[in-house]
Image (tube, rainbow, N blue to C red; front, side, top):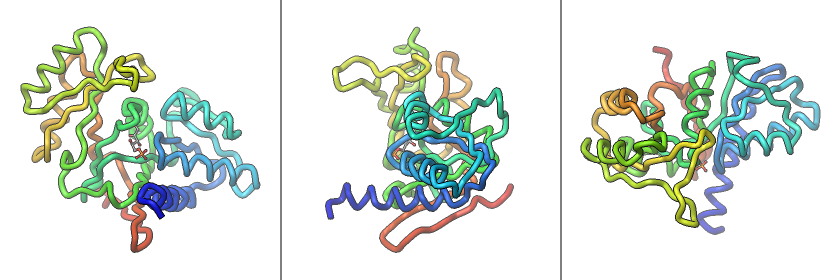
Length: 235
Ligand SMILES: O=C(CO)[C@H](O)[C@H](O)COP(=O)(O)O
């Protein structure tokens, strides 16, 4: 089996395990990416077979909204349901405290809005995403408004990052569902996550960043030795 096929199998195992936490009647956040999509497909299967009933989904990206509609999952909004019971989403890097880097799929803003409205934020990953210190494997995606984006890039570089504007395969800047740009900011291993998150959050022109601190309640990791379910201790 190739590495990619093996990794996909692990992603699927983690995502389908997370779906077992969903009960009929729940409002469910639908995450973004190649791992979360396995959960969305499984939810659709369980709705079709009648094993789950009365689920409504809050999609974390326009493309997820389209896919969920295609699969027949009823959708809602945070205006109709301000409280999401459980969200299943992926992550790019996860530390031992369940802090995350997210935004590899450029959906970090909607993902964070849904995460902060969720009673349970269940993160599903294969074990390659685990990291002792965030920033070791992945640059932090930072969503910026288009006006003055270069000024934000220079300011983030002054904090010590290598900064790259995310581009599409045709070379044009990638725009998010909100019409903003993404700066991928490589800080290397980050010693003080809270300080960096606060600095980024306070800067006008930065809409949001991919550091998800204290938002994940559950982590489901699939690896060569099986599945582990880790819960963040209540604070
Ligand atoms: O944050 C995300 C999208 O913005 C994704 O959840 C993250 O990039 C993980 O994706 P994948 O499961 O494809 O590795």
